[in-house]
Amino acid sequence: MFKSLSSLWMPAALALAAGLVALPARAAPAGFESGDTQGWTVSADGVMLTAQGSYTVTLTDDHDPSFAYTTTVTPVSGGYFGLLQMGPMPATGATTPVSHSSQAEFTLDLPSAAGDKLFLRLLTADYLYSDAGPGIPAYDDSIAVVYDGDTANPDVWRASDILAAGWSGDSDWQPFALPVGTQHLQFTLSNRYSIDGSNAPLVAIDFSVASVPEPSSFALMALGLGVLVRVRSRPRA
Image (cartoon, rainbow, N blue to C red):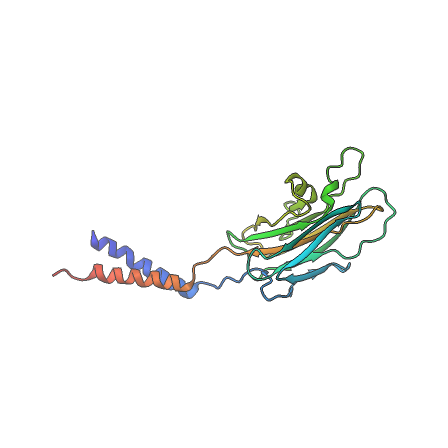
C-alpha cells in the first residue's frame, strides 16, 4: 500500500515543481492601476476617458429641474477605475429622440481566463423616460461592450434596466463574465436626446481578475509532497 502511494506522490511533486518554472505571471487586464488610460483608443468626437480613484457626480434632468442625484463612484478592484464620458452633443431640431454614440476600445495585456469579470456602472437621468408609453418619445441611454469583434453577442446595460431595478439614475456596479480568451474589447456609450434637452450619460468601467495561486503556494505544496515521499520511502527498522 505504502509503495503504491509513494509512486503517486513522486510524479505529482515533480509536476508541481515543473509548474513553478512554466507558470506565467497573470497581469491584471486593463485594471487602470497605473492611474492612466494608456492603450485605449477613443472616438474623435470629444469623448473623455480618464482613470479615477473616486468620482463624485450629480445627475440632473433637463425636463425636471427638481431632480438631482449625487453619488461617489469608487473602484470595484484596486485603486482606480476608468470613466468614459460623452463629448458635446450635436445640435438637433428633432422632437423625437435621436441617438449619438461614443466609442472606446483596448486590448488586454493577456487573454482573459475563467473567472475574470468586467464591471460596468451606467449613470444617466434618462431612465425617467424609458417607459414613457405608446406615442411618447423614449430616452434610453446605454452602454454596450463587444468582445473580440463578436457583435452578435454584446453585453448591454440600459437606462430602462435601471428603471426596472427601481434605482434612481445609477445602475451601480454590474458584473459581466468575460468570455475566456477575450483580448479585445469595444465599448459604445449611447445617448438618446431631443431638442428638449440632453442628459449625457457616463459609464464607469472596472475589472477583477480571478485569483491565481501565488508561486510560493505551489512551492510549499511541492515541498510538502517531497517530504511525504521521503518519509514513505524510508526503510522500516
